[in-house]
Image 1 (cartoon, rainbow, N blue to C red):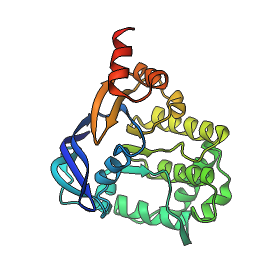
Image 2 (cartoon, helix red, strand yellow; image 1 turned 60 degrees about the vertical axis):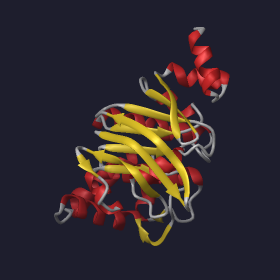
Image 3 (cartoon, one colour; image 1 turned 90 degrees about the vertical axis):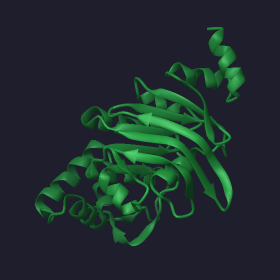
Image 4 (cartoon, rainbow, N blue to C red; image 1 turned 30 degrees about the vertical axis):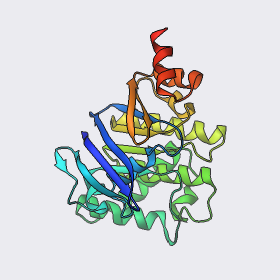
Length: 250
């Protein structure tokens, strides 16, 4: 579904990502782990074509389409959803207004208001979100936990094929992590999307049964493995040599 080949990304003339390669198939969950500043979030921004990040070389393709000449809106329409660690606040526009227009753009047809409102209510109940959120401005005057839950409303309404979670556990307490984790697992069980999880913690991973783990260091993947690698990292830290030695001794 997603193929990234030999990617190099710069920001303000500084190379952040280099020699980055990753393939994610439909239904697969991949986890990018690493210390702060290793380029994990840059990968997310590069996929969605953030204007501050320049792809110097390499390629990113999604469902067989090269994303090189597509802007963020076009890429989103293909079915990619980014849930960032700091969701943007949009004052003066409600969730209902944004979602109604987004669905109209996505499906290229007029939204049936009755079906739309019914689905909004179903999703709010499904993810344990107060229905009042539907009429609140997008992420405005919300706590960190409320913003992440609010983004889940958009996720379930837009039904993307690839979900990118950029440090989703940032700023969440234990209860909020559980709420978000259970909602994401429910979405995965229903729609079987591909998921890319960017994190340096393992708490959100408890809600998924099987996934592949990649360790990033200095802008590239230095080690890959199955879910056991995440637990090893918690024990040894992110040093690639330490992790590799620990795996050899298992």
